[in-house]
Image (cartoon, rainbow, N blue to C red; front, side, top):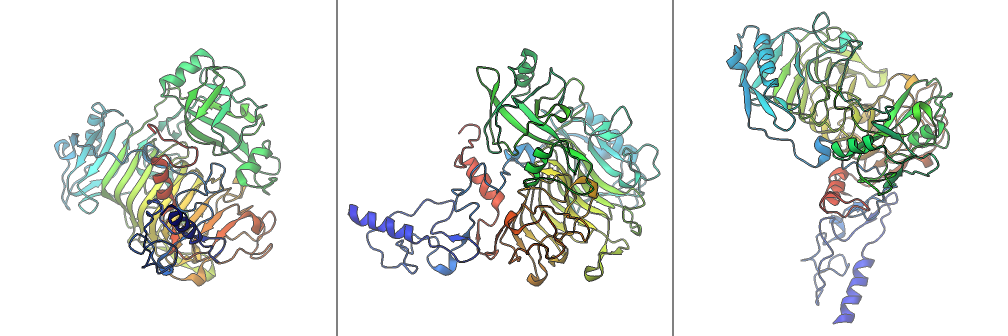
Length: 614
């Protein structure tokens, strides 16, 4: 009996045969199961893998999926230094909690004079009064709802939700309608210095001393009571779980770390361009041996949050997740530093929500590329906040997340329009554009999921300065994945229905802000309705927009990487920079790589990473 089991196991392993599709291999059992138990009689084994059909989840070759070299069945091919980014911390509360379903109603707009009918008079004052009353009754730890019953409400001024724990909730996306009767370009009270891009609902944020609207989080990156430099002599590498400071923590900084739940931010300033003061960091972020983006002159702050354990020497910090980037020893603005927040001076907010309603803006003709009326939908300037089950109609710019924020979730949203569109696009792919940006993600580790674009925008889904963000389970008629520069790094698009893919990579942005995308961005299981129009990211005719193309493309309709120089792809493009696997979308395992990563992480089986309590 013992010898039979050994032979059966050998036979099972031999069933994990190589697949001829672009460096992929097939597997004999799925991620959520262990290998089926051995049985003494294998008489019903159609695929001859040594597993009885009654125990084999994929009993024949036709049903057996194909796995990626980047992941495998259950992450066995992944490591913290893998080119497949770790994205399990994306979204509200780092993906550790579902969106809250707070039942505590602290204000009802009807009680403040709003009227919910098609013939409603101006309800702005009632909404603003309800929000003002709710501010004194809610907090991050004790959230509450401003409830908007079913009906149509007329509003002509901005609504500002600027208190942690404040939730604006309707009775349902198709039941509660906030009908904004005007744009905000001429408003004397609306927040937002660029009047064309003002939003009707602001979540968090306030005006700084210069009168500019910004998020309130103040990471004291250069204040020595709130920050400390890394040891530049210590070799920190992407994938490490330990960082070392240049000196032991000062008592006040150590206490601040403890008081803030051992949460820190590691950040380093980076320039891009031919005269960069941080060429090592820029090369690491963009995935190349050197870095010189023609015409680029700007820069960003590269950053990541951690929960840490402080070693006995007060100089070594152990991280709850691997380093997403390799810090350099370059000293621009103090070099790589850890920091905590200055909570005494910050108006930073968390746990703000907008949910279960529609926002309808005027059906003005959309004639200008940037919009003319200042009629945006929602702007998020808060951390750990959300927009859920919301429809935005006729917005110049639909929903935007600020680049200083972390861990926001946008889910179950619909972007639609009935205004007169603007004919846009190059001659070979013309389309009707109903606005500028439909949904824009900036910042760190945001989640966009379960969305539908019923109309096209110049930029459908935009990433700008995103690190560790996830876009998944979305659909559009001709989706455009706009990579709008500023170091988009280690982000993921998965389980997306692009519709017609001729615009899939159409991206612009200011050329002074570096290449369109940096390293480790991943595109996994992208469906389309016309494989002949799927194509590799394009470069401009006079400058390299996409740079190194250090990207991962898995299970799409793209079947080959272009050659050097093909399709306006000058240096530094090289096909060896990119990872391409061409298995069919219906066959790839897993279908959604974010969900597979999250499951392995929660089970404590993801290499080297243990969630709390494991």
